[in-house]
Amino acid sequence: MTETPFAPQTDKTETEKGTTLRPKFGADGLMPAIVTDADSGEVLMLGYMNEGALARTIEEGEAWYWSRSRQEYWKKGATSGQIQQVVEMRTDCDQDAILLKVRVAGNGATCHVGYRSCFYRAVELGSPASAETKLSITQDRVYDPKEVYGKD
Amino acid sequence: MTETPFAPQTDKTETEKGTTLRPKFGADGLMPAIVTDADSGEVLMLGYMNEGALARTIEEGEAWYWSRSRQEYWKKGATSGQIQQVVEMRTDCDQDAILLKVRVAGNGATCHVGYRSCFYRAVELGSPASAETKLSITQDRVYDPKEVYGKD
Image (cartoon, rainbow over all chains, first blue to last red):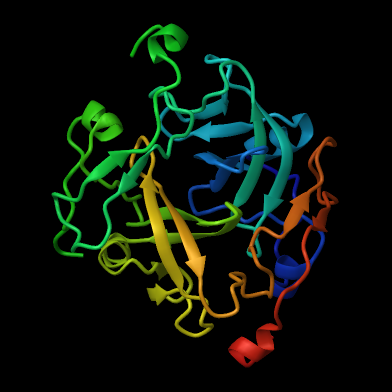
């Protein structure tokens, strides 16, 4: 990005308590975006936005991300149909994270593995962390990725 | 960290669908951790964990982070009393993010500015993003930071 559309962070109090958006991106130019279901509140995924993805999302009201693996803009749902209509966007006190409350189109799922939420596994707690720390699956798969992506 | 306690990521299918914790930290050694209220589901904050913070949280069941500003371990609530008891921890398909469902001790709030959630401001949508993009405050302050931290 050669030019940011956003207001800069100048004063800590203004950033933390003010009413102007002053987003702070990391050294890699990205900011994490938490995505929740606007109706149930369930956390669906965590994506990353650069300035352009944040600007597109604000203007269009549908969620855009920056794909770190493909190094390109990624409109969630462009392939899968799982478009995210943004009901509300929030930022946090430091303005270095985004929260999206969305309604998911298509089959209504979010995770490319076939689950409603990417956070479908719980971590075993209460023992020292080790190479044996277990995950347990907390929800049923709701679709077959082969039918959406043409591959598993 | 000289030695990781965790299993490595070797195979994509095992990482995405397996039942062993194989956390992937970023180039900076950190992983984002989304924190929600275990009862209401409200998103409260986003913190960052390094290997040690994740290991401590798994073992103790209370949330530890790595403070990027202070470059030290940070037990949330050590100063404010806003300790986070972890009811459930999840990881996502790529195992590069954490979700904590917590009960907050002390005054029950999370944000150092005085709000229940750090995500207390909504971003105006539907117009091109600009230096004028506005935030609106969505909840009331629930405590005075001066009383907890001795300063505003």
